[in-house]
Length: 272
Image 1 (spheres, one colour):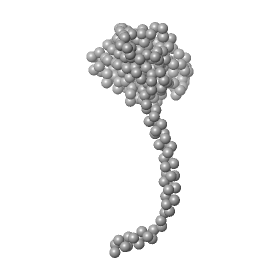
Image 2 (cartoon, helix red, strand yellow; image 1 turned 30 degrees about the vertical axis):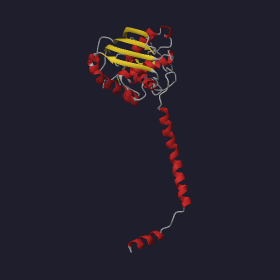
Image 3 (cartoon, helix red, strand yellow; image 1 turned 90 degrees about the vertical axis):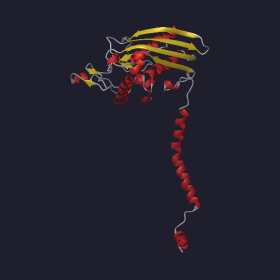
Image 4 (cartoon, helix red, strand yellow; image 1 turned 30 degrees about the horizontal axis):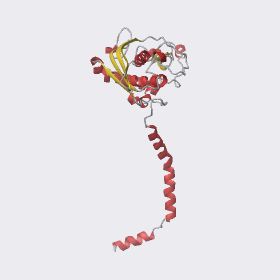
């Protein structure tokens, strides 16, 4: 009885023609196609490319070049802490186009700040994904960025050993010093096993490269307020001097930090 009652109820419902069902399925598929195509395209972009090709993310363009970074024992112990503080400051810039700065002085001084929306900071150029931001990745990305410009034919292994890293007014007291400098070593080995360079590198960070705003060149842009507050400019200079030692005939194509002023005279970086 119950089965016949259900059959009569089902028989009383209006049936949708098969042709209409097919049309509905087709329409639904067409609606989803743009999203599917976008996802497939995004997946295709994730494939690594050779070093000679242009790519927004240098870390994903390493190809057959291996870059290794090691630290002294004291630096290695504090690496995670330094990376965390640097990532916080980097996030402030990317989110607010400011390093958590405060203005001191008159409103007229504040009015001298320049637009920041159209500035591509070195951190954004070298490491587009914030979660990948670290000291080691800065060294790697700056190296690949310069090799693509200056020695695109290079294949081999580059090893950085950073022994001392001091940033004059860094929020982490361990890094503090009277001035910013770095001491380390670079070793470059070609794909055939030949040692191209094995040398100690010592650099001091001086703001000797300034650019006027707006700057659209290939240099790694930092702000003058970062010169003695963050590790990025110092590491970029270390890479620049190291590669210049290996390929002195390509000095014109090897670039380091470029400092620009985009703030009023009373602006200071606030520590995390």
